[in-house]
Image (cartoon, rainbow, N blue to C red; front, side, top):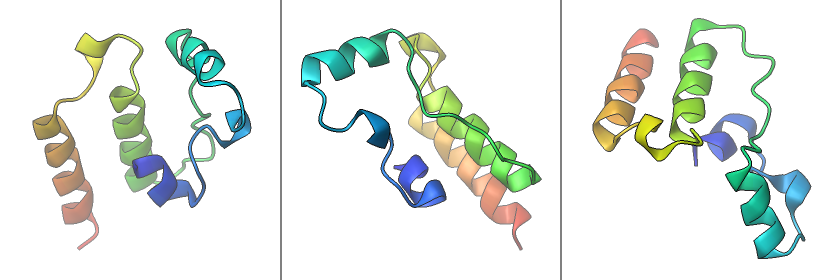
Length: 79
């Protein structure tokens, strides 16, 4: 997952050990990890990508093609 790659820790770690049903209810209610501390253009692009992938409404989530496009842009900006 992008979250683990970016932060080096497991997404939803603070919810680890909860019953699956409780975790799913929290996710359905919109709980997502905080996107804070992003200051560079690259980090903002990554955080926006992750945020769109985790959109509560499935129709607002990125497609695979959208993800590929953003990742390609980020990698090209690093050259």
